[in-house]
Image (cartoon, rainbow, N blue to C red; front, side, top):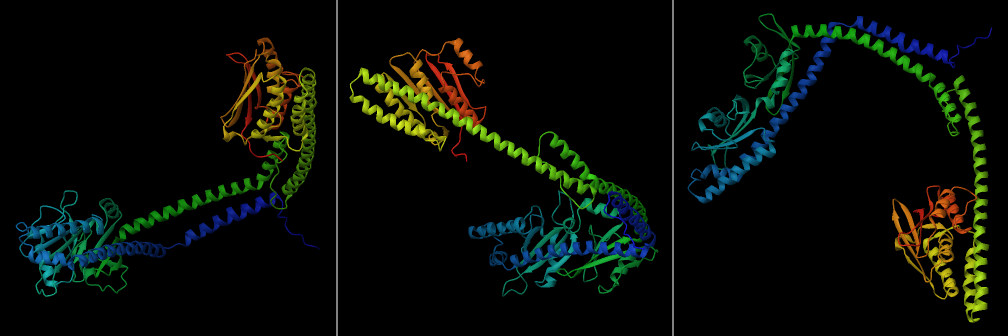
Length: 588
């Protein structure tokens, strides 16, 4: 008997497999893992997490210590500072010493502001009990312990935690202090002492963070190399039994926990601070840890529930994703019903929905091809109509011009005929050129002036034309013979001698605006109203064939928002306005 595989290509099988993989298996896995968890594993993870925090904090402390040490090296080796401490006791009496005092004070300020970011104070003390510092109101007596330690170290750095000479926010505070003896090359006892004090809140933790850590059972300690132990506020915040346990242990030992004489246990993390030669300890009460463990257990139960809900949501999302092709297919059908034949669906997979979408896309493609063929046919019809409209101008204009030549031959001497025929030949040549419908405004004006030269011969210079078009507009394109029919209309119907015609060009709202005005009699208001009402009729005429032809060609090329408008000027005459797009390219 031939075995058949369980179908996995159908929508139903995908939903069932997703339910099993993304809901049942994860729930079983997390329940099993939850009951297999133990206190030792959680304690180890907590210890490792705390150790990362301790290492990071110890590194930050060491960075500060390095900055303080580099600053002290810069100051104790400065020749000007050494000379001033040695000889500058009477700086108030001698101008040279006073300038040294100003320079030294400026150096202290620069070190305070730039090297120490304004967070640590700097002071120099000479052997005459003078204090030069970056703050005010301090006396040599306040530095007595640091001076004693510096002299004992004979130039080596002396680190300690002591009540600060520098107030923080106007209040006394504890500082990490670095003091060094300032010595010259030939000096044995030194010329003075350098003091740098960093607020302990800057070195350890800020007040808010410190309060948060203490509320969670965290205690921070510093153990100096000589056995001194400092807390995060100066004094150690634990009993002597805890201090003795820390003091009596080697820094090389692994010490995850200590027990006090009172029976209280602490989990201990530590890290070395190389620059100080000290060790940073973090103590966490085991009692607080047990409370955290219970919190973690409760949190785990909540997380299991959250994960179960999350996987349920994920299953719903996947189900929606599997059925999304059906929704896309329905939306595409709706768009096709509205005439959007480029709306194809994306094909994913080889299931039934994909097969349906593939057949739908094939149908849309065939419909789109039919629409494209219809559009091409429509374009060919419009082009034929455009060529027919263009052809209407040529015999109309040619008959008017030949009529002018005939009457000139009768009423004038024959010498004018040759000139008119020559210019007429040029115009006929331009008219018969059909390879390019859109020409530049510059070319259109040249054709217009050629035409006007014939009309001036006809009317004995009683017709004058003036054009005022900026150079920047001359390269815009417009349909050929746009201006000539309008000017011809003014000559024929202006009924004014002499007749003046003015052409102006400008830019407005990203459009090319051409205005043709004459001083003729204009158009009666009744006739003008009829023209406006007939503007959208295919059988209407503005004035003969010419202006209507121009208006139709403009709209066929650029759209219904462009074209010609007529109105009578307030000063008399006709005002024709042509609106065109600002286009310099030649459409293919």
